[in-house]
Image (cartoon, rainbow, N blue to C red):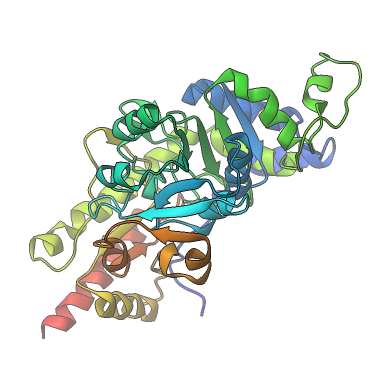
Length: 381
Ligand SMILES: *Cc1c(COP(=O)(O)O)cnc(C)c1O
Protein backbone atom coordinates (compact mmCIF):
# COMPACT_ATOMS: atom_id res chain seq x y z
CA UNK A 1 0.00 0.00 0.00
CA UNK A 2 1.46 3.35 -0.95
CA UNK A 3 1.08 5.89 1.78
CA UNK A 4 -0.29 9.37 1.40
CA UNK A 5 2.27 10.56 3.93
CA UNK A 6 5.50 8.57 3.72
CA UNK A 7 7.65 7.78 6.73
CA UNK A 8 10.77 9.10 5.07
CA UNK A 9 11.86 10.83 1.86
CA UNK A 10 15.51 11.54 1.14
CA UNK A 11 16.25 15.21 0.43
CA UNK A 12 16.67 16.40 -3.14
CA UNK A 13 18.27 19.83 -3.40
CA UNK A 14 18.38 22.01 -6.51
CA UNK A 15 22.11 21.44 -6.83
CA UNK A 16 21.89 17.65 -6.52
CA UNK A 17 21.37 17.00 -10.23
CA UNK A 18 24.09 19.46 -11.28
CA UNK A 19 26.64 17.85 -8.99
CA UNK A 20 25.70 14.33 -10.08
CA UNK A 21 26.03 15.34 -13.72
CA UNK A 22 29.46 16.78 -13.00
CA UNK A 23 30.54 13.48 -11.45
CA UNK A 24 29.20 11.40 -14.32
CA UNK A 25 31.27 13.49 -16.71
CA UNK A 26 34.39 13.07 -14.63
CA UNK A 27 35.75 10.98 -11.79
CA UNK A 28 33.42 8.37 -10.29
CA UNK A 29 35.78 6.49 -7.99
CA UNK A 30 36.15 7.63 -4.40
CA UNK A 31 38.30 10.32 -2.79
CA UNK A 32 37.74 12.90 -5.52
CA UNK A 33 36.77 16.55 -5.13
CA UNK A 34 33.30 15.99 -3.62
CA UNK A 35 34.58 13.54 -1.02
CA UNK A 36 37.29 16.04 -0.06
CA UNK A 37 34.72 18.84 0.23
CA UNK A 38 32.41 16.77 2.43
CA UNK A 39 35.25 15.67 4.70
CA UNK A 40 36.78 19.07 5.20
CA UNK A 41 33.37 20.67 5.74
CA UNK A 42 32.67 18.19 8.53
CA UNK A 43 36.16 18.53 10.03
CA UNK A 44 35.68 22.28 10.32
CA UNK A 45 32.04 22.31 11.28
CA UNK A 46 32.25 19.54 13.88
CA UNK A 47 35.86 20.13 15.00
CA UNK A 48 37.25 16.64 14.36
CA UNK A 49 40.93 15.90 13.64
CA UNK A 50 39.86 13.86 10.63
CA UNK A 51 36.61 12.79 9.00
CA UNK A 52 36.71 9.93 6.48
CA UNK A 53 33.69 9.28 4.29
CA UNK A 54 32.76 5.61 4.28
CA UNK A 55 30.49 3.29 2.34
CA UNK A 56 28.05 3.11 5.27
CA UNK A 57 27.59 3.86 8.94
CA UNK A 58 27.93 0.13 9.56
CA UNK A 59 31.32 0.14 7.83
CA UNK A 60 32.47 3.12 9.88
CA UNK A 61 31.57 1.09 12.98
CA UNK A 62 33.40 -1.95 11.59
CA UNK A 63 36.50 0.22 11.11
CA UNK A 64 36.40 1.41 14.71
CA UNK A 65 36.41 -2.18 15.99
CA UNK A 66 39.66 -2.74 14.07
CA UNK A 67 41.07 0.61 15.23
CA UNK A 68 40.30 -0.30 18.85
CA UNK A 69 42.23 -3.53 18.37
CA UNK A 70 39.30 -5.66 19.51
CA UNK A 71 40.30 -9.31 20.05
CA UNK A 72 38.28 -12.48 20.60
CA UNK A 73 37.08 -12.59 24.21
CA UNK A 74 37.08 -8.82 24.70
CA UNK A 75 33.87 -7.31 26.02
CA UNK A 76 32.06 -4.31 24.60
CA UNK A 77 29.33 -2.49 26.50
CA UNK A 78 26.31 -0.98 24.76
CA UNK A 79 22.54 -0.64 25.10
CA UNK A 80 20.43 -3.47 23.72
CA UNK A 81 18.07 -0.90 22.23
CA UNK A 82 20.13 -0.19 19.10
CA UNK A 83 20.64 -1.25 15.50
CA UNK A 84 22.35 -4.56 14.74
CA UNK A 85 25.35 -2.77 13.22
CA UNK A 86 26.40 -1.33 16.59
CA UNK A 87 26.96 -4.88 17.83
CA UNK A 88 28.01 -6.53 14.55
CA UNK A 89 31.14 -4.41 14.30
CA UNK A 90 32.54 -5.86 17.51
CA UNK A 91 30.95 -9.32 17.38
CA UNK A 92 32.66 -9.77 14.00
CA UNK A 93 36.04 -9.65 15.71
CA UNK A 94 35.02 -12.14 18.39
CA UNK A 95 34.02 -9.72 21.12
CA UNK A 96 31.26 -10.50 23.60
CA UNK A 97 28.55 -7.85 23.62
CA UNK A 98 27.46 -6.83 27.12
CA UNK A 99 24.07 -5.12 27.01
CA UNK A 100 22.91 -2.78 29.73
CA UNK A 101 19.54 -1.16 30.27
CA UNK A 102 18.41 2.17 28.82
CA UNK A 103 17.02 5.33 30.40
CA UNK A 104 13.31 5.66 29.68
CA UNK A 105 13.53 9.43 29.13
CA UNK A 106 15.94 9.35 26.15
CA UNK A 107 16.04 5.62 25.27
CA UNK A 108 19.85 5.95 25.55
CA UNK A 109 22.20 3.73 27.55
CA UNK A 110 21.77 4.32 31.28
CA UNK A 111 25.19 5.70 32.19
CA UNK A 112 24.70 4.80 35.86
CA UNK A 113 24.68 1.07 34.96
CA UNK A 114 27.85 0.98 32.89
CA UNK A 115 30.43 0.74 35.66
CA UNK A 116 28.98 -2.41 37.24
CA UNK A 117 29.04 -4.13 33.83
CA UNK A 118 32.80 -3.60 33.46
CA UNK A 119 35.06 -6.65 33.87
CA UNK A 120 38.79 -7.28 33.32
CA UNK A 121 37.93 -8.10 29.68
CA UNK A 122 36.01 -4.91 28.88
CA UNK A 123 37.63 -2.90 26.10
CA UNK A 124 35.12 -0.47 24.61
CA UNK A 125 31.95 1.41 25.58
CA UNK A 126 29.66 2.24 22.66
CA UNK A 127 27.11 4.96 23.43
CA UNK A 128 24.49 5.18 20.68
CA UNK A 129 22.74 8.58 20.56
CA UNK A 130 19.14 7.61 19.94
CA UNK A 131 17.12 10.02 17.82
CA UNK A 132 20.16 12.32 17.72
CA UNK A 133 19.84 13.08 21.44
CA UNK A 134 23.17 12.70 23.22
CA UNK A 135 24.02 10.08 25.81
CA UNK A 136 25.42 11.44 29.09
CA UNK A 137 28.92 11.76 27.62
CA UNK A 138 30.72 13.40 30.56
CA UNK A 139 29.89 10.44 32.79
CA UNK A 140 30.70 7.91 30.08
CA UNK A 141 34.08 9.39 29.14
CA UNK A 142 34.98 9.71 32.83
CA UNK A 143 34.20 6.01 33.45
CA UNK A 144 36.22 5.07 30.35
CA UNK A 145 39.19 7.15 31.50
CA UNK A 146 39.19 5.62 34.97
CA UNK A 147 39.07 2.07 33.59
CA UNK A 148 41.32 2.61 30.57
CA UNK A 149 38.56 1.88 28.05
CA UNK A 150 37.92 3.26 24.59
CA UNK A 151 34.72 5.07 23.62
CA UNK A 152 33.13 4.67 20.19
CA UNK A 153 30.11 6.88 19.58
CA UNK A 154 27.46 5.41 17.33
CA UNK A 155 26.32 8.84 16.19
CA UNK A 156 24.62 7.41 13.08
CA UNK A 157 21.53 9.46 13.95
CA UNK A 158 23.39 12.41 15.48
CA UNK A 159 24.77 14.49 12.58
CA UNK A 160 24.42 18.21 13.59
CA UNK A 161 23.52 17.37 17.22
CA UNK A 162 25.62 18.55 20.14
CA UNK A 163 26.33 17.72 23.78
CA UNK A 164 27.53 20.68 25.85
CA UNK A 165 28.33 22.44 22.59
CA UNK A 166 30.44 19.61 21.15
CA UNK A 167 29.33 17.76 18.02
CA UNK A 168 28.21 14.18 18.57
CA UNK A 169 30.79 11.82 17.14
CA UNK A 170 33.72 14.00 18.26
CA UNK A 171 33.59 13.34 22.00
CA UNK A 172 34.67 9.69 22.15
CA UNK A 173 37.84 8.24 20.62
CA UNK A 174 35.91 7.53 17.43
CA UNK A 175 32.52 8.54 16.10
CA UNK A 176 30.38 7.08 13.34
CA UNK A 177 27.81 8.86 11.18
CA UNK A 178 25.35 7.28 8.80
CA UNK A 179 24.22 8.84 5.54
CA UNK A 180 21.78 6.07 4.78
CA UNK A 181 18.73 7.40 2.98
CA UNK A 182 16.68 7.25 6.19
CA UNK A 183 19.04 9.62 8.00
CA UNK A 184 18.96 13.44 8.06
CA UNK A 185 21.59 13.72 5.32
CA UNK A 186 21.74 11.04 2.67
CA UNK A 187 24.20 9.39 0.31
CA UNK A 188 21.70 6.64 -0.46
CA UNK A 189 24.19 4.39 1.31
CA UNK A 190 27.12 6.01 3.07
CA UNK A 191 28.64 7.10 6.33
CA UNK A 192 31.63 8.73 7.98
CA UNK A 193 34.26 7.89 10.54
CA UNK A 194 35.30 10.72 12.86
CA UNK A 195 38.72 10.51 14.48
CA UNK A 196 39.63 12.59 17.52
CA UNK A 197 43.29 11.67 18.01
CA UNK A 198 45.48 12.60 15.00
CA UNK A 199 47.81 9.66 15.72
CA UNK A 200 45.00 7.24 14.81
CA UNK A 201 44.55 8.75 11.32
CA UNK A 202 47.20 6.77 9.38
CA UNK A 203 45.86 3.39 10.51
CA UNK A 204 42.29 4.41 9.68
CA UNK A 205 43.35 5.53 6.19
CA UNK A 206 45.06 2.17 5.61
CA UNK A 207 42.02 0.18 6.75
CA UNK A 208 39.79 2.24 4.46
CA UNK A 209 42.11 1.82 1.43
CA UNK A 210 42.23 -2.00 1.24
CA UNK A 211 45.14 -2.20 3.68
CA UNK A 212 47.38 -0.03 1.52
CA UNK A 213 49.06 3.31 2.15
CA UNK A 214 47.58 4.75 -1.02
CA UNK A 215 46.27 7.83 0.82
CA UNK A 216 49.86 8.83 1.64
CA UNK A 217 50.86 8.10 -1.96
CA UNK A 218 48.14 10.43 -3.28
CA UNK A 219 49.37 13.17 -0.95
CA UNK A 220 52.85 12.69 -2.41
CA UNK A 221 54.33 11.53 0.90
CA UNK A 222 55.68 8.25 -0.55
CA UNK A 223 56.59 7.32 -4.14
CA UNK A 224 54.73 4.01 -4.34
CA UNK A 225 52.07 2.35 -2.30
CA UNK A 226 51.88 -1.19 -0.98
CA UNK A 227 49.93 -3.54 1.29
CA UNK A 228 50.81 -2.59 4.86
CA UNK A 229 48.02 -3.95 7.10
CA UNK A 230 44.55 -5.50 7.07
CA UNK A 231 41.95 -3.40 5.32
CA UNK A 232 39.00 -3.40 2.99
CA UNK A 233 37.28 -1.00 0.60
CA UNK A 234 35.44 1.51 2.72
CA UNK A 235 35.55 4.55 0.46
CA UNK A 236 32.35 5.57 -1.27
CA UNK A 237 31.97 6.61 -4.88
CA UNK A 238 32.02 10.29 -5.83
CA UNK A 239 28.40 9.81 -6.93
CA UNK A 240 27.39 9.34 -3.31
CA UNK A 241 29.67 12.14 -2.12
CA UNK A 242 28.25 14.61 -4.67
CA UNK A 243 24.73 13.87 -3.45
CA UNK A 244 25.82 14.42 0.14
CA UNK A 245 27.62 17.66 -0.70
CA UNK A 246 24.44 19.16 -2.17
CA UNK A 247 22.86 18.67 1.28
CA UNK A 248 25.81 19.70 3.45
CA UNK A 249 25.88 23.05 1.65
CA UNK A 250 22.40 23.67 3.04
CA UNK A 251 22.80 21.61 6.23
CA UNK A 252 21.56 24.39 8.48
CA UNK A 253 18.42 24.90 6.44
CA UNK A 254 17.64 21.17 6.47
CA UNK A 255 18.24 21.07 10.21
CA UNK A 256 16.10 24.14 10.78
CA UNK A 257 13.12 22.72 8.86
CA UNK A 258 13.32 19.37 10.62
CA UNK A 259 13.44 21.06 14.03
CA UNK A 260 10.43 23.18 13.12
CA UNK A 261 8.40 20.08 12.16
CA UNK A 262 9.54 18.32 15.35
CA UNK A 263 8.48 21.28 17.47
CA UNK A 264 5.14 21.39 15.71
CA UNK A 265 4.45 17.72 16.50
CA UNK A 266 5.57 18.27 20.06
CA UNK A 267 3.38 21.27 20.80
CA UNK A 268 0.33 19.87 19.05
CA UNK A 269 0.56 16.61 21.00
CA UNK A 270 1.19 18.12 24.45
CA UNK A 271 -2.51 17.96 25.46
CA UNK A 272 -2.49 14.19 24.90
CA UNK A 273 0.52 13.91 27.18
CA UNK A 274 -1.25 16.00 29.83
CA UNK A 275 -4.18 13.59 29.59
CA UNK A 276 -1.78 10.71 30.27
CA UNK A 277 -2.45 9.07 26.89
CA UNK A 278 1.04 9.40 25.44
CA UNK A 279 4.58 10.28 26.52
CA UNK A 280 6.62 12.72 24.45
CA UNK A 281 10.41 12.63 23.99
CA UNK A 282 12.51 14.58 26.46
CA UNK A 283 15.67 16.45 25.57
CA UNK A 284 18.16 16.84 28.44
CA UNK A 285 19.34 20.40 28.94
CA UNK A 286 22.92 19.75 27.75
CA UNK A 287 21.72 18.39 24.43
CA UNK A 288 20.81 20.15 21.22
CA UNK A 289 19.25 17.60 18.92
CA UNK A 290 18.77 17.42 15.16
CA UNK A 291 15.15 16.23 14.92
CA UNK A 292 16.32 12.96 13.46
CA UNK A 293 13.16 11.34 14.68
CA UNK A 294 9.82 12.26 16.16
CA UNK A 295 8.55 9.50 18.37
CA UNK A 296 5.91 9.16 21.03
CA UNK A 297 5.16 6.40 23.49
CA UNK A 298 1.76 4.90 24.16
CA UNK A 299 0.50 2.76 27.06
CA UNK A 300 1.63 -0.63 25.79
CA UNK A 301 2.30 -2.89 22.83
CA UNK A 302 -1.41 -3.30 22.00
CA UNK A 303 -1.94 0.42 21.68
CA UNK A 304 1.30 0.61 19.70
CA UNK A 305 0.04 -1.72 16.96
CA UNK A 306 -3.51 -0.33 17.07
CA UNK A 307 -2.32 3.25 16.57
CA UNK A 308 0.11 2.24 13.80
CA UNK A 309 -2.77 0.46 12.05
CA UNK A 310 -5.10 3.39 12.54
CA UNK A 311 -2.55 5.72 10.93
CA UNK A 312 -1.92 3.24 8.14
CA UNK A 313 -5.63 3.23 7.28
CA UNK A 314 -5.41 7.01 7.03
CA UNK A 315 -2.49 6.61 4.60
CA UNK A 316 0.16 7.63 7.14
CA UNK A 317 3.32 5.58 7.54
CA UNK A 318 4.23 5.41 11.23
CA UNK A 319 6.53 2.65 12.44
CA UNK A 320 7.87 0.93 15.55
CA UNK A 321 11.60 0.64 16.09
CA UNK A 322 14.25 -1.78 17.37
CA UNK A 323 13.52 -5.21 18.68
CA UNK A 324 16.04 -5.18 21.56
CA UNK A 325 19.20 -7.00 20.47
CA UNK A 326 19.48 -9.17 23.59
CA UNK A 327 16.14 -10.82 22.83
CA UNK A 328 17.05 -11.56 19.21
CA UNK A 329 18.69 -14.71 17.90
CA UNK A 330 22.09 -13.15 17.19
CA UNK A 331 21.95 -11.11 20.37
CA UNK A 332 21.71 -14.30 22.42
CA UNK A 333 24.59 -15.79 20.46
CA UNK A 334 26.96 -12.82 20.64
CA UNK A 335 25.92 -11.12 23.85
CA UNK A 336 24.51 -11.18 27.33
CA UNK A 337 22.41 -8.72 29.28
CA UNK A 338 24.03 -7.41 32.42
CA UNK A 339 21.66 -6.46 35.24
CA UNK A 340 17.92 -6.03 35.05
CA UNK A 341 15.95 -5.30 31.87
CA UNK A 342 13.74 -2.71 33.51
CA UNK A 343 13.09 -0.44 30.56
CA UNK A 344 14.60 -1.84 27.34
CA UNK A 345 11.82 -4.28 26.48
CA UNK A 346 8.84 -2.39 27.86
CA UNK A 347 9.80 1.04 26.54
CA UNK A 348 10.68 -0.23 23.06
CA UNK A 349 7.29 -1.90 22.75
CA UNK A 350 5.53 1.41 23.47
CA UNK A 351 7.40 3.55 20.97
CA UNK A 352 6.07 4.79 17.59
CA UNK A 353 7.98 6.91 15.09
CA UNK A 354 6.06 9.46 13.05
CA UNK A 355 6.84 10.67 9.52
CA UNK A 356 9.83 13.02 9.64
CA UNK A 357 11.79 14.30 6.67
CA UNK A 358 13.01 17.51 5.08
CA UNK A 359 10.18 17.91 2.57
CA UNK A 360 7.44 17.02 5.07
CA UNK A 361 5.08 19.98 5.10
CA UNK A 362 3.63 21.60 8.16
CA UNK A 363 0.20 20.76 6.73
CA UNK A 364 1.16 17.08 6.67
CA UNK A 365 2.32 17.24 10.29
CA UNK A 366 -1.13 18.60 11.19
CA UNK A 367 -2.77 15.71 9.33
CA UNK A 368 -0.72 13.17 11.27
CA UNK A 369 -1.53 14.93 14.53
CA UNK A 370 -5.25 15.01 13.66
CA UNK A 371 -5.22 11.31 12.95
CA UNK A 372 -3.56 10.61 16.32
CA UNK A 373 -6.27 12.66 18.10
CA UNK A 374 -8.85 10.80 16.07
CA UNK A 375 -7.52 7.49 17.36
CA UNK A 376 -7.72 8.49 21.01
CA UNK A 377 -11.17 10.03 20.59
CA UNK A 378 -12.52 6.79 19.12
CA UNK A 379 -10.93 4.92 22.01
CA UNK A 380 -12.68 7.14 24.54
CA UNK A 381 -16.11 6.50 23.06
C1 LIG B 1 21.50 3.84 10.57
C2 LIG B 1 22.24 3.31 11.73
C3 LIG B 1 23.40 2.53 11.60
C4 LIG B 1 23.90 2.00 10.29
O1 LIG B 1 24.11 2.90 9.33
P1 LIG B 1 24.13 2.42 7.78
O2 LIG B 1 24.66 3.63 7.10
O3 LIG B 1 22.75 2.07 7.40
O4 LIG B 1 25.08 1.26 7.70
C5 LIG B 1 24.08 2.16 12.74
N1 LIG B 1 23.64 2.50 13.95
C6 LIG B 1 22.52 3.21 14.13
C7 LIG B 1 22.10 3.57 15.50
C8 LIG B 1 21.77 3.63 13.03
O5 LIG B 1 20.64 4.33 13.22
